[in-house]
Image 1 (tube, helix red, strand yellow):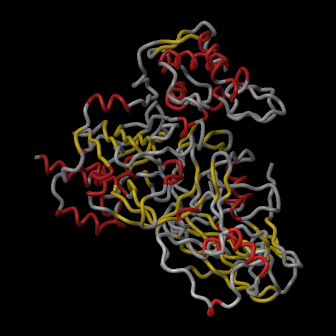
Image 2 (spheres, rainbow over the protein chains, first blue to last red; image 1 turned 120 degrees about the vertical axis):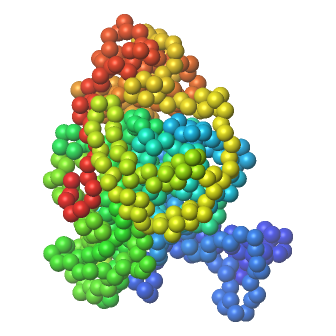
Image 3 (spheres, chains in turn green, brown; image 1 turned 90 degrees about the vertical axis):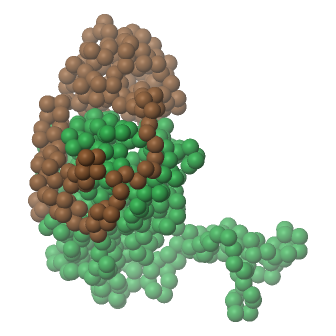
Length: 417
Length: 211
């Protein structure tokens, strides 16, 4: 310990700065550990900790300009070439920290100067108009919480998958912006209009056709996320937000809305984001079906015999979650979980179920029920309904975790082909 | 008159019906009135009774501003620019600017993971890739997408004639048009894509049924 501090002293010219100390902790090894609460955590534990043993004996750093996470907490997204997944297993509740919100881009994240940003609304309107970001912010504003989910949010195939791996392409924020209905009122939308074309200003100039009913119902042009400006990865400076609808329709970096009377059959809504159903190809699946997952315990956590609070999230694009059921005996019997209030419309809903594990091998699983009476199906139910070739979109099967006698937790992959 | 029209707009959603064109199908009648559709935001909508006819924020867009950004192509061909392209010219452009990611001839190479999807139907491929020939319902989409987003490293760099040519090549490679075809704004929207008959609109409305 002393030796390590001496080393720091040498490097920083004799002064041990707080930066050095934090830096030392961040650079430390990440090792798995089991805490006394039986919760497996990945903690950044300093190999030779510069953090003093008794914090009551040393004055800490003063106030700063930006907060930061404890060096012992290191939740990270898991990126691929085209997307990045939220670490769902690291969250205690349902608001996703903005820097951990999932990402899905079609040609990278554009760099947009907010002072040059403009949103064009034209087509079947009385007056085609352009709105600057300042203009958008002057309109009556609106705030709500809702989830976003990529409709390609399902992975399976091996036991060593975390919630993040299986369905980390969903996150939740509190969004602020102007209701799209307010802007459509301003431009004087024709009463013959039935669709909108929403277009982004990324390098894919990503485009989707949206029924105008949704625009008038609860669509938002959002510029705020969790109280601050929306993040570049989520569409800075402004994006379309369609609560409950597949993420791809919520066009980020939106620059153009064309009011029209038909869908344009863009690439994303025809050759992508569609899926086989009994020999046909289903298109325009907008609403995300009810879904849930147990995030604790999950792989690679380990549990101990005794009391375990099973925790997870449930959500539906069709309104509110009214019930989540948890099974601790591989689906033979089901128990009603407690829902964290308030349960919000089209929002991640946290659930908990207290369980006393007797140490024997079993499987735990959850299923969500939404206000339309829809119950989250098993993978077999989806195959029975749609056929063997499920494609890769709009899959919301029940997720099962295997609990092994040694307390290890493994995903239960199901093969259906 | 103008303000009456504006007020009407707020309540118009109740009478809308969503018609999918291109000769397809009726998605559904939206029978609910405004309170049904927007019940969750009624407090906000009540506020609108005090709203002015317009807020006056924003400005009128000029015709040239609209034209500059209005690049969408409709299934009936509206939006297609003047010009034309040939299969042979498209083949040359494809080889130069597309094949590096989408494969020589647009087909998967066994054992090789291409950076981008295969584009040409290949019944011998075990992976049964979704391609233009077997999964794209509208030829207009091909022109629209290539022009706005391709090539991936230089999006929007092709001229309209080059986009017509690449479109022609890809349709010919998928055996949808003849190798000597010349594509333009008139004949492109008339092409019937093999996959069009497969597409159905999601008709699920919630409820207990798993579909």
